[in-house]
Length: 467
Image (cartoon, rainbow, N blue to C red; front, side, top):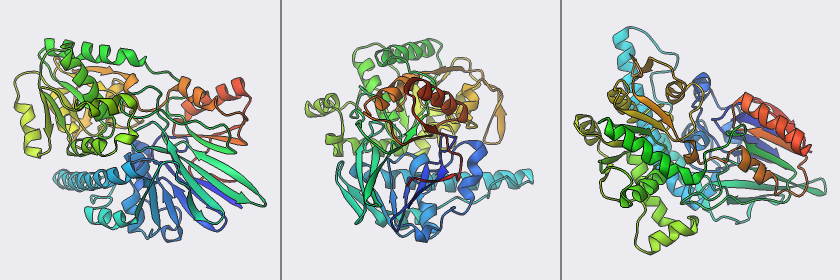
C-alpha cells in the first residue's frame, strides 16, 4: 500500500511538505515554512502527522518554504534522518540559524509593539523556534551525493537528481517495490531554468509512474535571459540619475549570488555608473562562501571563472555587510547606492528597514527579482497597494516599482513543458503543486489539451492511494 498526503504547497506556493507511507515506512519530502499571509497560522499548528512516527525526511533544497519547519518538527518529536545533497547539508545550518534569529528578533519587536498598543496579534508573541531547536536538528542531517542510491529499507530507495534551481537543489526519485512490481515517483522540488549562470541545468526523465511537479510559473514565460543584464543596467542608471537608491529584496541563496554575477559583469564592462553596492545579508554572505566549496555543482562557465582566478562574486564597489550597526549606517549615506537585503518576499529581516527609508522617496526604486507569494509585503508592493504596513506603521508608496522576472530560479511555462516533453510515456498521474490555484488550473487545462494527460490538483491534507 502506497499512500501520499499533501501537507503543504497544495493549491498554494509555499509550505512544501508531502507525507508518504509505503511498505512499512513513513517519510516526508520537504518540511517547509508557510509564507503566504493567509496560511501563516499553519506554521503554529501541531504537525498533522505524529513526528515521532516519521522515519526519514528527504529534503529537496535549503529554501525556507521547503526546509523552514524542520526545527519545529524536531521540537515536536522527530528523530529520523534528514537526507539531502552535500551543498544543502552545508546551507541548512546557515538558513535555519538565521531564521531562528530573525524569528526571535521579530517576536520581541512584535511583543513590544503590541504592549505599547495595548493589543494582541493573531499569532503568538514568541518565536516559532529558537537557535537551540536548530541545534537539536543538525545531528540528524545525512549528506549524500547526486545519483547515489539510498536504501530506505529493502523495498524503498531514493535517488537525488539535479534540479537546476539553486546550488544543491534536487529532484527526488523514489522507487517502491509493491505487489511484485515497482513504482517510480518523482518529486520535482523547485525546478530550475536551463542555461542559467552558476548552477547546472535540470536533469530530465524518460519514465515515471507518478510525478509531483511545481507549477509556480505554469501560466507565463520569463523574459529572455540575454535581456536580464540590459534591463538591470537600465533600472540602475535611471535610479542613479534621479539620485535615489535601488533597493532589491533578495533571496540569500542563489538570487543574491546571481545578482552579484550580473553586477560584476556590468561594473567591469562599465555599463552602469559607479555606485556603492551593499549585500546587506549575513546569511547571503555566508551562502556565497558555500559556492566555492562545491565547484562540481556549478555550471561550466562558473567553474571556468573560478579556475581562472576571477571570482564572479567580487567587484569594485561591493561591500558585504554582516554587522547590524553597519546595516543601519547605510541609511545615512547621501549618495545613491544599490542595496540588496533579505528577505526576498519582504516578510522579515533587514529589507524592511531599507523599505522604510526608501519607499516614500520618488527618487528611489524597489526592484523585485523573485517570486512574491500572495499576501506577502512584497506582493502588496508589486501589486500597487499603497500605503503598505511596515513595522506597524503605514507608508505611502512613492518609489518606482520594477520587476525583472528573468532572474527567477523557477522554470517558466515554456520550460515546464520542455521538461515534461522528455517523458516517453505519460505518468499514471501528474500532481500539480507549488502554485496559486488559478495558475495551476490554467496549466492543468493546457496539459490536458496539448498532451491528453491525466492531471490532479490536490488541496491541503488531501490523501491518495497510489497502488
